[in-house]
Image (cartoon, rainbow, N blue to C red; front, side, top):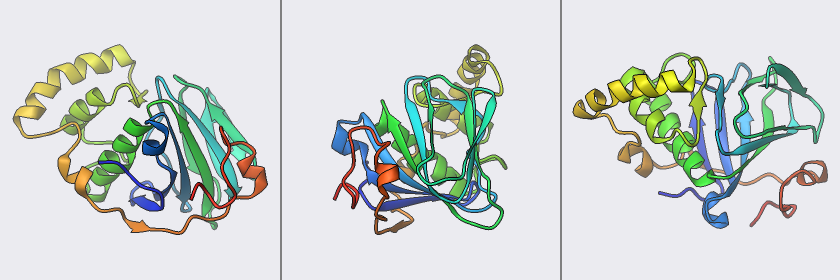
Length: 218
């Protein structure tokens, strides 16, 4: 089930809300633009890579720390951005203890599957208390979900060949117990809310691949 412009998806554990600006359905699945609001103390769910996708973070307000390729990049000025190339280890963290951070995120390549994994499956699991403290699915759920979406996201605490072996052993057991890589319940779950897209400053629009009109794409 696709997502639509203005729909908001919330991860209470990671303290992250994504508002869809340009859904992948409008770009044949190849590109998505999302407004990411991060509460103080918020973080991405574990160090990870996107094997085939690039991801760009562009700051609108607040402060975000992005750990990418072994170094920290602090976004604290309007229009600052950082590009994460495909296959690069990264993770982001709120860098302000008092202020909500607003960042525009652009994902290129396999954006439709990214939406399905992040907005539907991982956020749904977090809402239902089925993740660890980092927002990652528990062992059996992780085996089937991360196998199904290995082209979109791979956690990096273990080398990928090792993860493939572990997931390959656990996945048949998980499926026998009823676990699914993408739970149909989450595909049908209504968004957290419908939000009005904020107008983006020119300093932010200048970074977006292909351009975005000042009021979003509406």
